Image (cartoon, rainbow, N blue to C red):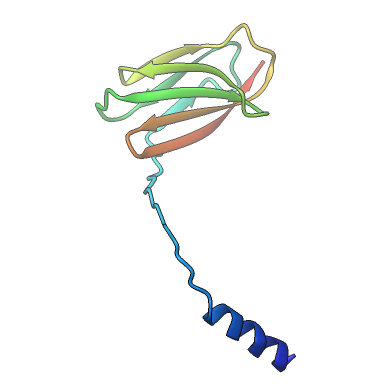
Length: 106
């Protein structure tokens, strides 16, 4: 086992490895309430702060986006009454802040 380790180490040290790392800091934000949950087709987001560039994305359990809206006030109404009852995910994006909550649709 030592021989294999030394051989592998020699091969690794003779190779030139270049890494390019791109880092983007995503800050979680817990400053929004989602209600009622479970919902019957219309739900509300109550958000703190005055950021006008907030995007709300609703996705189903297989990752398909079913609704996208721009949240321009501290309370936003979202209607998804034409969709099949089940589990959905509501994602609020504001600058570098991304938060996802679960929503049950009846």
